[in-house]
Length: 449
Ligand code: SAM
Image (cartoon, rainbow, N blue to C red; front, side, top):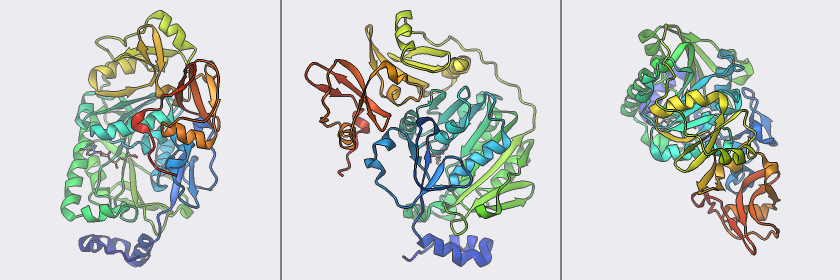
């Protein structure tokens, strides 16, 4: 395969890579490695070699048809390129993860970093997974639902909306929209869209996002900045700009020599570069900065509390979930649950942000009836034993995911969980002589197989 790189891109990167340039170009001709990150809450297992900078990542020897794997739809793993999983080192090495933390992932769709963060944070910590583009926020919400954690809120806000939340967050993750040079191998479109003008646009946008969210970081909190691009304008220089504007300290991370990551330390900035000829992954950059300036924390006063469901609904829902000290509330006819430790934060944020999803949606309330929500089936805290469970074959699992009739025979009435390999896929409603498939129609798989 030949690779024709934009001339201006070559002019810029060739001097940076020097004698490594040919190896870099050669790597772009190789197939991109396939990797997944398993969901630690779903007892997932995958064959494959470990990705050294994360406890959850695996390289696969071939690229299976993920769409035709029912466990993928159950949220057993997330398909993600390996370099981006370095986020784990950035978080573990700079932050005490045993503490209750407020974390913002400001440009979160489709949810790679957010689902990874949920695997790393304590269950009483709060993740705000935000995405400014509405259609992408819907995909983000879907992936967070599949991951199954109740300590996440998905929002659809512009980064500037976070500037009002002074000192609220312990960690900010800015996985910035960028010129995508690191994606040239995986996504040839990224190469077509590349231009020096676009790099400049991205650089300006990144600074705007950073300036918008910076006030929301606590004193001593950390901001993890990453891009999937190589150029210094969007990377080191952006971090340098932030450090010069703000009272902040760039943090050094420990890496092993055999990981193949390039550590650049210049002008007070530590940056970590991933090049495809040196790591088994795509192009990526990451840098961590700690806030040093005193920041007045916003007071968590909410205009009103969360709207509780009727007592008898709450009693019924208590049997559905194993969330610690569950806090139930209603929102648009839906009953939801969050860990009780997050009540104040959730009520406060509801006044300030545009929620797409909060905690786990358990049921739609129809008069006094509870119709289970799909998110409840995927929740890691679902009390599965409270429901009838129908373990199905792979063929039936795929029929279920296509919303086709299954061949399974079962008796009884009411809502039941369709399970594959011990993992819930969703709900059916069992009636006298048929079974209604409640899989969300917009999630239905369409691939033949
Ligand atoms: N963090 C994601 C993950 O790991 O799956 C990938 C994020 S992607 C690199 C950057 C995201 O920024 C995209 O979802 C894009 O829609 C969003 N975005 C685009 N313009 C933006 C802006 N002006 N402010 C904030 N986010 C923006």
